[in-house]
Length: 249
Image 1 (cartoon, helix red, strand yellow):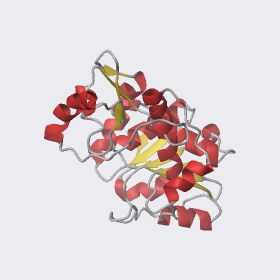
Image 2 (tube, rainbow, N blue to C red):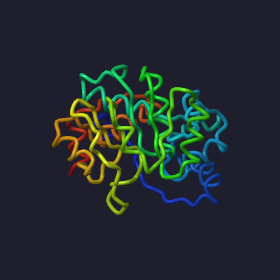
Image 3 (cartoon, rainbow, N blue to C red):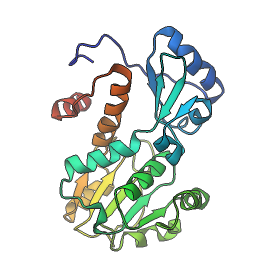
Image 4 (cartoon, rainbow, N blue to C red):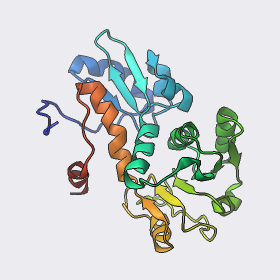
């Protein structure tokens, strides 16, 4: 907003699920043009929205809300876009069609990752989650390209995977460590972690040590924000190193 001379503010709000609909409906009257939505509200806002984009409907979750001038609440999901743009920016040689992708996690972020990987041509998405039912739900929604691995066998899905993604909160500051065995990880794989606190997780450190191309999660955070910003303010922001450095201060 400073770069483009936009008079506005971006503020955090902690809202309980029971108050979510009421708070969202009153915010446009206070001058808000939109919201980002994070855990645990990404799926709940779908029922509150008047309009839902196709990609949000496909993913089953929304991270961006737009307060339209006609009073309607528009829900979108930019997580998949941010995920793919982060890989393209920071692993320019990444080829989604080169082989299977292994995805750890089964929450809202995993839904966006799986949808975007399939859309970009990944031949197989191997998925493992601590709660089997959530993994099975993704398999049911996204079809035959998704193969489920039991959590105790999660390390096996890394064998031959050319793209490896941690979409869970495991490894995040304050959360349990990711304890999936990494012995089968190929040095030729592109490995990314959606966690960005810390910036270098143990997964990325190990992957880097064996020669993998690694991509941290901060780029996804920045790139998913760009289309939301454009929806709110009519200006598409450039995601460059200067923006990244602001986040690292």
